[in-house]
Length: 361
Image (cartoon, rainbow, N blue to C red; front, side):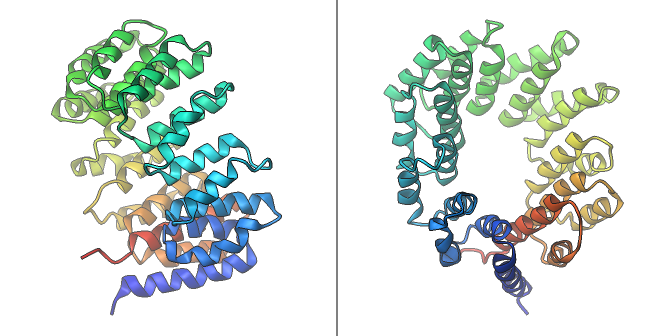
């Protein structure tokens, strides 16, 4: 018996019924399947008079990477009913080489929020750029009148393939006004040369602001390596007494995707901290080759707060265990008053469907 195939069929049956009863919830879940063959299920909602359903449908086809998605999203840019900033977010989800010129063109928009969104979208795509793009973003990072645009531009420098990026970020690191953004950019750049510098900054953590510690631990985790892991584990033990700072070290460790740290994250699922549970669940979800269904099921059973349960449910879906289907179905069919909990279960069904897809031979 092909349990994965059977579960995928069952998921489609549930989503089909949900599409008839609660289309808004179902469309998002169908998007999570990332299956372009389900486009006919979504297509009628792309022209719906209900703007919310149109939003959801556009989001879904971006997630599916459907061939029609690019043209639909470009058309949405000229739709007066749809906010341009929201379209930029959708283009980032869609990704691909055709999206990049559109986003770069947005960098000359007169509205700072549009430039900020475009820079964030470029980071999400993690594109390699031509030298002229580097010059454009560098100019924004130094000369734009809006401080938020300058900060986003610095962060975006870290995603560009240009030989001058590392030295420019080190230069920006020396100014208190640009330090935080440049550290984030070093995390995106993932250049091992930054590790000693970041470790040095953390060695005097007591003199740092909490948000600075979060920024540095995140950058270290993204760059990775034995030095980053050792520093973060040492800090993890030292900061147990401070909930917020301890969360910062768990966040950095989560980016390492190191399966040997799974027990640490499983322990974090039992804490009272929303942030720790979210970070731990996300970190466990990224760990491939581990069956954590038993540990996650126990954590879910012991957790009473539905908002904390969201994170554990998400991790269960990413783990791709067919046995979790029944749990998500029960939540959907239940009468839980927290609507977001049922919506979470629906999206998890879509994620589970994707995780159970046949491997490409």
